[in-house]
Image (cartoon, rainbow, N blue to C red; front, side, top):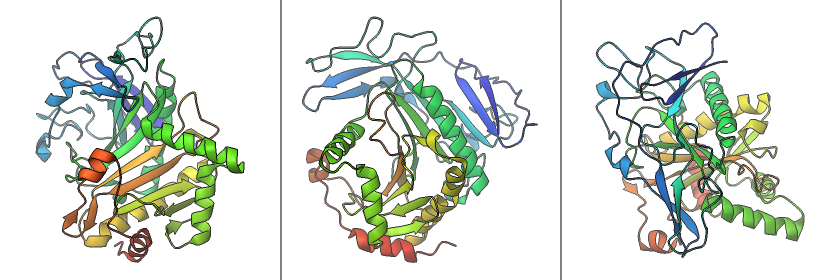
Length: 368
């Protein structure tokens, strides 16, 4: 793999990840761009003990442009995009409209120079430092992750690993999150096959919750909660969708979403960087098979969110177990699950699809 760093016209970093060492990445960004926005503001919600990012500049981000104006396609004469090169394998660059950002040279940490904001105080605020990046999985605008070759998936994973390590080293970053939103029903703003990486200046609420549960489980049993869930699902088998030597994909017993699949490596590692080469290579064939099964369920592209759960940077690493959680809001060919009163207001989920039936449907789905 060849990794090349360059810069866009407004100073943002862009990384090319290439399979071949002879790739020429000398093309410059010839656009005239506005100055980069100031960091967002974090405001503390004492009712939920969560930080909320207020990022008004994101209202102006690009929204569903026509294919011939896609900012994630390679640049061409008369059509300059976020990627200066005329072709690419995998590209990662700083988001032009970030939820979190750290100005160059700013080493003040999450609370600014001198320390942290007063978490727990009513009205507490702090700068939304961190970083947001865009990951372009392929230069083919009309492709999808499910169509990527195993070699291309490996390259995407190498990009995830590279960026996770670098973002985790930014002062004040507490967690790195790699994810993909796919489908208009999910709310994507760009149709090109891509994902994102968020470097948060705090540990996210979901991760705090699961690590607390994992800590209590270890106190009760001495085991790792995630490993024990995986072992139970592999033994039961009824909710397993696919498996190979290094990975298992299963529908969780308490799935919140109509179609939800968790993909676990068979060995506990805190983050993607802990995976061995054989494990990295084995992920792509299994994961793209799962994605094709989702698309085959109803004969239409399945909208989904795919989320990598990795350990926080400084806490809970011994408890964490890197894995991917994938879910879709589609519950039938012509029906979507909307988060109504119970889910949206109370966080109390009601699933219309029996998890065992979802797994059976996925195992039997047409993947051609």
